[in-house]
Image (cartoon, rainbow, N blue to C red; front, side, top):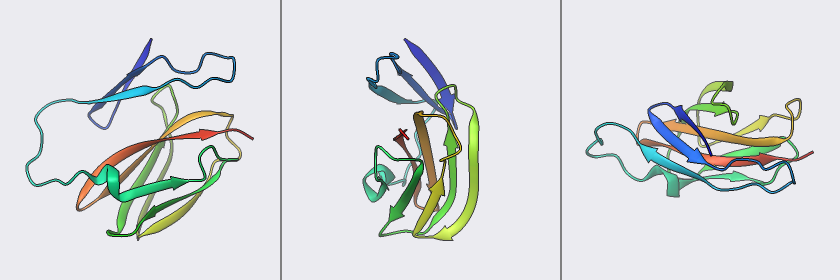
Length: 118
């Protein structure tokens, strides 16, 4: 069992078991919830997933303000401030593994898992 905290949200899961099987991670919100925030998770996509390290983050409804990507140890490995509905991210120089894409907008924030397998 492994866990980490990213931007006030706790994650727990069994992680990577070194046999090319990726196991589920569960997200828990820490602290008080915010009133008026929508479930932003449903509004953006990360594709292709799994990826060779180059993938697109897309939101049809809102402009994305900020993208942060964390490795499975909770270390921030990428950050970008944008004001667009989509972005292309290149992690091809990073090792294979599971990464967490945190997207923030003025409408809310969400985290998605991406698998990089080159």
